[in-house]
Image (cartoon, rainbow, N blue to C red; front, side):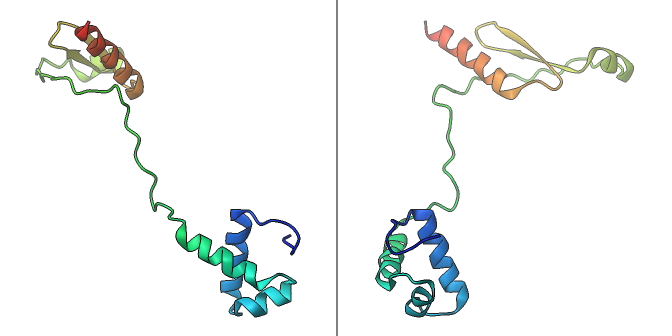
Length: 124
């Protein structure tokens, strides 16, 4: 897998160092058993200590999304048999007079894109 003549990639170095630690052998013993240069292990151990890997990836927020005021209006709800027949629905009314009817099971990303377009249209 890794010999003294080939260059180690980050993944190879991490794997070999993990194997060395799990073996219970010191670096010199492990390297000798594998026919590898112990100095390479020490250099890679130092490099890997300096590399900071975030524990969780950073959240990426959409840049064009902004908050839009929403007013919740309570309306009469049809009986359950009518809701099942026509599927439940939510109506969003923007302050600019736009109405968006959202059916049950809607795609949230699509709704955000629609709201972005309406927000951009307000600014024009």
